[in-house]
Length: 447
Image (cartoon, rainbow, N blue to C red; front, side):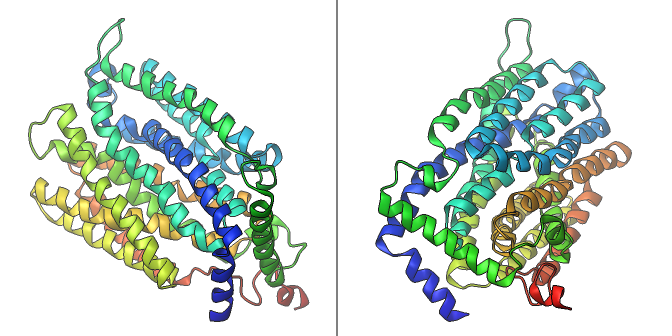
C-alpha cells in the first residue's frame, strides 16, 4: 500500500503532469468557486428575508421551514437524471444549462405571492440546480488525479463558505433597496438571480468537457494527464469487474453508507444556515446589514479549517479518521450551543461547530470518489448527493415546526449534535477501496 502511494506521488509530481495539474486548477477552480458562490447564495438567501416574507405575505415559521426544505426534494428527484444527461451532453453544455435555469428560478422568487407559490418556486429551484454539485465532483474525477482531489474539493467547497460570508452583507444591503414598486427582498432575489444567468457566458467559454479537448494544454501535458487518469481507472478495474453495471454497484452497502454520512452532514449545514440569522437577532437589536456581518463570522473560520483539515488528511493519510474528528468538533459545538441560554455563547459555539461540519463535508467526498468506478461515478455521486441533501429538507422543516410550537429551536440543536456525533462513528465504516467480495468484484461473481 505504501509503495502504491509513493508511486502515485512520483507520477503526480513529474514535470509534465505537474504543469498540467497546475493549469487545470488555475483555469477551472476559480470559475467553480464563483459558480458555487452564486449557487449557494441563490439557495440560502431566503434565510435573510424570513421576517419580510412573514410581514408582507403571511408566511409563518412552519411554512417557511417547509418551503426552504422543498428545494432539496426537487433536487433529490432530479439529481441522478441530471447527471446522466451530463455524461451524455458533456460538462460544458450541461453545467451551463443548469446555471441558466437556476438563475431564472432564483429571480422568479421575487414574485412569490403566498405559501403555495413559495413552495412551488423553491421546489423548481431545486429541480433547476439538480446535478450541479455532483457534476463538479465528477469533473474533478475526470480532470485531476486522486491525490489532488482532496485539496481541489476543499477549494471548491470554500465557495459555499465564501458565499455565506458574502451573502450576509450583500443581501443585507440589497434588502434596503426600494423602487419601481418592489420591496428590498424582491430586489435581492432579482439581482442575485440575474448574476447567475450572466455568469453562464463565462462557463461556456472557459470549460471543456474532457482533457482531450483542452487546447490550452500542450501535447505532452495533455498526454500525461490523460494517461494518469486512465492509469487510475485501470487500477479500479483490477479491483472491480469491467462489466459491473451501475445498478450492481448501487446495491453496494457502501453506497447506502455514503448517503447516510452525507445526510448527517447536510442536516447540520442547512439547519445552521437557514436559522443562523434568527439566532443572531436574539443577541441584540441589529440592522439587516449588521446581522449579515455577524452571519459571516462562522463561515470565515470554516474556510481556514477546511483547508487545514484537507492538508492534514493529505499528509497523514487516514481520510476517515480526519472526517471523524471534524464530525466530533461539530457535535461538541452544537451541543454547547443548545446547552446555553445565552445567545452570545450559543453563537460562539456555532462558530466552533462550523469548523467541524464544513471540514467534514470537504473530507467526505474523496472517499466515495476513490471507491467508485469512473464510468458510473456521475450517477452514483448524484445519488449520494441527492439522498444526502434531503437532510436539507428535514432540518429546516423540523426547526420551523419546533419554533412555531415551542418558541425555541433548542431541541433541533440537540438533534444536530447527536447527528454529528453519529457521523463521527459511522464514517469509520466507509471504504475508499472496494474489498474482495464487494458487489461487482470477481470474488462475488465466482461465489
